Length: 192
Image (tube, rainbow, N blue to C red; front, side, top):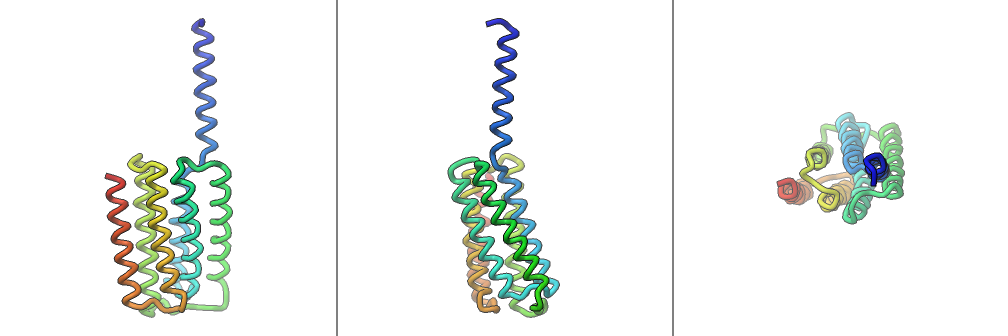
């Protein structure tokens, strides 16, 4: 094989690899979107635009997305089809957050229940940011991110169940915090 053919073959191989990589989903982008949604829910609780019950409903939707991310990432990189499905679900949650924040219902941001839900949502943001940092630094691979998103899904579901009746009690929050502490340890172990 001549040097020209070798260079051409190497160039074609590199371009195919880049094209294949470009078609895969980006877990960092997916996690960043989770962070953005959680921040919007938290700001709605802080401003009174969301009730505790509405925030709980939105957390249930976030739990579904995290479960799907976990399932898809457990197999390796996201396919374009998987990425598109996650994006559609995130788009729906985004619209739901907007609708809930702009409806006639208002919450009491000073209530103990709203404060508890807000603290739990803030913890979600922190956990997701740690996962995203692990992705960007290369400390976490797709399968690890999938396992951690499964844990995020459990926390979201617990928050949803706690807020379903519009009231997050002290004992409910303690259970959520215990689960979040376990998740925090899993994130640390996976990254180290």
